[in-house]
Image (cartoon, rainbow, N blue to C red; front, side, top):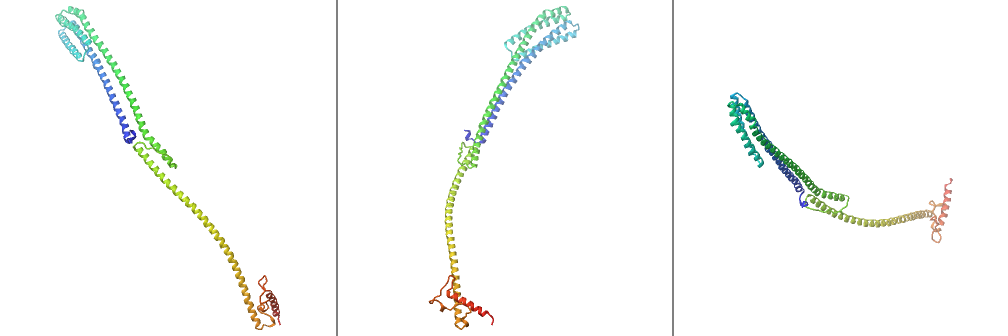
Length: 385
């Protein structure tokens, strides 16, 4: 399911889960804090306030006893009237405190103890108001003091024990409330710690799942692209899901397929070029052989041309000699003296059988003889007369 979710949605789910768990933790913490606060308030109202109320009742009772004794010992009328008024005031105060105490909610045991205190205190206050104070006002101090220090003391002690028992009970009840508060606090602390642990575990799990779902495809894609960069296009990439990383993998896979097609085309072109290169090489070798043949033929033609040129030059020389010979014969016929010739060529009539005989130098023997003769003639003509 997570593979089909977008990365943004995954992150939103992860952070939303963490936020929801944090809110749950906050709610649980607030619940236990409120519970502990209620326990503390209960300790205060049912413990401290109750003890304060009972202590106030006890103090008022002691105040009445003290005022009654002071009344008996006093000789001043105004002082006795003031003390009588204070006794009445403290009596009313005790009744009001008992009413407040009952309103706080009492158990059956506490109600019984309150009843005992009221009965004992009522007997004590009646003795004070009906016997001790009238005797004191009448001047019968000795009898009034005797009642205050003997008969009234027993009744006062009974009321005091009842109020002390109530106070002890309230202290015990406050201790129980305190123990409950401590227990609730520890339970709250344990519950919050467990919730924190669960939230941390779940948060780490969600983070690990989301992180793995993002980094693992990216790592695979990086490995594939690295191999592709090295020239290995055979590695396959598997596309999973439809999130951004899956789209990236799909794009890389498409690019890989295109690169394979381009590589196949390039291989085809390379093979074609290689074949063409081989054919061109063969053609070049053939052309080289043909050019070598032509070069050999040209060399042969040049050699033949050189030989022909030499032959033509030899023929030309022979033709020149023949022309000079003919000219010499023509001049001799015109009457050169002494049988000598000016050009040095012999007559054709001296040839053998109508043909000229040539030596290896291109001259006939007749020409050689004529040359020697012409040379001698030249020597004679060169001498002075």
